Length: 433
Ligand code: HEM
Image (cartoon, rainbow, N blue to C red; front, side, top):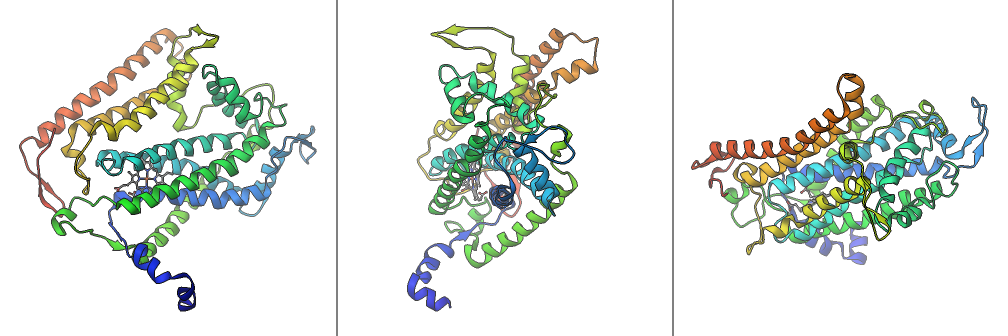
């Protein structure tokens, strides 16, 4: 069979060119692969959901409800009633969280080890676009169950999008096919096509480009490779060793995440019921919570320029995230290098970069904390809103600065003038900055 195919498709050449490529084996490289596994599971469970979901808000009469409910809502009830339906829906839900978290951690590992440097700047840029696309794809799926929770959660993002100067209303009208209201029958079909077709296609194309570029440019090598096999690629061939290892890891991944999905089911739509004019109290998911937190503590103002409003929604929801994304994109270009980066750098030996990453994580944690402002006020009736907002602002600004300073001082003190003993490598050079 192989020979038959080989004679027609020249498989041996393909095998020699691509499948014998050496893949370095290092635990931190699995983060990219976990992101990929989560995406594959999202596509597979997404196909199951699509086969049983009705992207429409036409009213349908179903058992247990006095009034007709939207067809989309009824189809989620139907999915939950199928054998393993609720678990597969839950697996889809959790895989979205895992994909975003794994892509974020993968980005941190690339940043902390300097793997973004020449020649991988382009792949860093593609990576940032992938992370943003993954988040937007998750967002477009929020409204699809069309329960009261779904519509309210989508509304938070809808109002932020609308706040983009001049273009906001037009952009929202394209994404949501008009205003986001329970009575707008066009919104669900529009979000459905974006969520199951356009964004997944874009993700597949970008992930393909990301992986091809990685194969072309060759993976960075763990630091110990410099000593063990200088100038050579240290790793296992893509076929069959790496492929078998990936296969086993994928099965382990599916087993663990299916267990999580079954143990912590995604919320049943009955818990909130079909959309009503009363909006339930809803918090955004963890990857949006920091933006929501900033919005909670920004003062309210109105600044009109050429007919556009530059209010707090714009600053907290659009300006700050855009500046962070643009700043992240600029990272590889702030450290231009002559030589190509072949080996990973050790975070402990780059105190400035590592402390910066820790400070940004602290910023994220403090902004997320601000998202709980209302809950803090409810729990402490004696605390005034003004005082709490002032405390949250101080934390948001001071905690990241302190994190940077303390971590920099500690790392400098721990590694200054000392050669560091490393696992497998014997010795490495001292801190460089
Ligand atoms: C959908 C999201 C993503 C997927 C599926 C993905 C997948 C992968 C995989 C499988 C690898 C090889 C294994 C590894 O090094 O971990 C890789 C490498 C890489 N990724 Fe990603 N990635 C994603 C997002 C990102 C993000 C957000 C960034 C950074 C902003 C990024 C930057 C890179 C770079 C620079 C490499 C080469 C690393 C090296 O040579 O050491 N990727 N990616």
